Image 1 (cartoon, rainbow, N blue to C red):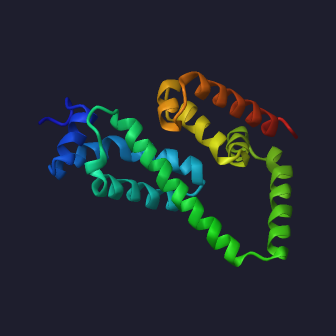
Image 2 (cartoon, rainbow, N blue to C red; image 1 turned 90 degrees about the horizontal axis):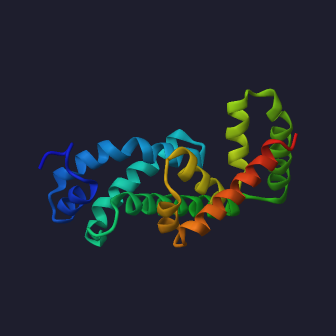
Length: 184
């Protein structure tokens, strides 16, 4: 099998059949896009690198669940979404265990101050900050569509909705981003 002409689905079918060497071309194709996707969701490069590695560990662990008839790209991004969700839930539990009222108040005040100072930064930083202020589902759909190049059909598959519903969600997320970005 030559990895440059072999489809993702064929490579993953080989991995599923325990030809683990075929994971290398998939890693080469998807490491950077998954890392960028997770970095935009977490805003932390180190955490994103760890989460990206976790995605590839799960590909190996759950390779038998891959169905060759399904698009590999949708399957691997769904796995990345799950890895991110698991990480976020763990972080929430840790924060809840450590948080007290004073910390919560201080964090809220810092977020407000950071938002006030956003205009001082350049436009790229402003947009990035505004994107991070969106709720995770809205940020995720914009990252998938605008930064990762997913079409609405693919996003619909990932989110379990129609392409039109994905388009509406993306439009609403973009409106919310505009409100945050142009608020000050």
